[in-house]
Image 1 (tube, rainbow, N blue to C red):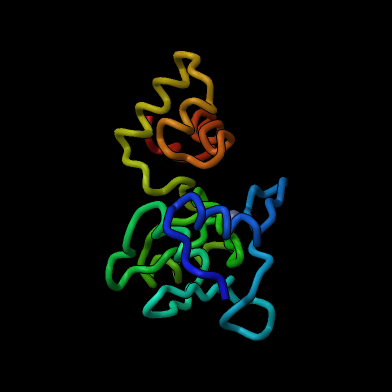
Image 2 (image 1 turned 90 degrees about the vertical axis):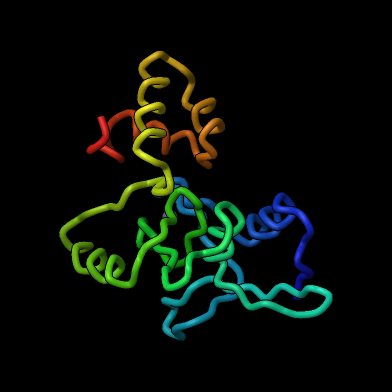
Length: 165
Ligand SMILES: [Zn+2]
């Protein structure tokens, strides 16, 4: 059982070591231990030890907390890519059980939630403005804490956040 690292960077490195990126979907797929359903549809899990306790985590929830802090009470971390083993922060968003239910129901009719769902509309407008000015996507991604520049590309092309103009 790994010790819980002291810094965010070390904790991320630990999670990255046990996951691989699917280049087609950009999902970062957990390859470590799984929890939940035994039929292969479970979530990624990890146990981290601290001096006075050990904590069992679902890795996508841990990933969310590393980036955004505590998950608000009663809400859950959702996968917009519908891959439960994915820990790409750009594919994770916060939502309710009802959102999850509605989303699953619509999934068959092809829908994808918003990538980088924590962005505000103001931020998305700013991203589009910078993109229109020719600021490199990599630079925009860094400025807004978006993990991959192709997520910025999708926003600029209107494949995500298309309702914000
Ligand atoms: Zn994903």
